[in-house]
Length: 268
Image (cartoon, rainbow, N blue to C red):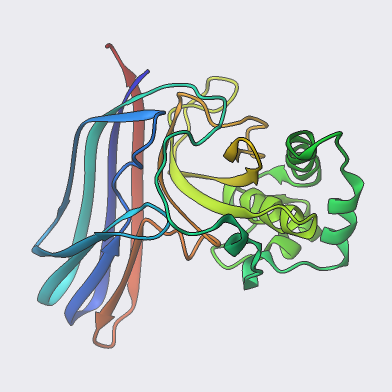
């Protein structure tokens, strides 16, 4: 499938700041399931800095915006050809050992309810257990935008019984780690939801490490494994660690962020 992305993130400051420094994970991952046809990231007033590929295989690009800065637009536009690999991250090069992703973080910290949910799932092997854990999270947390926020933890989302893709991913990571399965957060794009309706925002899911297969993606929000509707950008321990854009502004100001994303299927 050939997918086009038009993604703009705008930052506005109520008072001009002296400068802004950003770190981007906005380049599609290099693996057998996707091939970049064209891809461009632009930043209004921005100057490109150093770039490197980190231990998880993600390309990290630095940007500097000299002040005074009142508004910034980060625009991502491009086309990617995708292949359905049934969620398996085949051909992806990284140096971080999977066991590093057994580490607990604040958003994925387990409580009694998460431990109970993790223990409720079963499978004849680790792959079946991973599918069962993803299904358990789907059943326990209904998809509902607006009830959680950027800092909601997996435990809080489970207590609410509602959340968005970030909450589903954090909860799946938490229950997988409880069962001794390395798990990580993945950021990217989705062209449509499971029922074929448009998916408005950038998306997130989880990857669990299964011996013999490697990293396998699970999307509890859509009860699916990532297929050719997905574009993978990068990964991390949780949403903050895997954020496509991270940055800091020099100066005292209130920042307001607005994001628009369109992902469409185009003819080959």
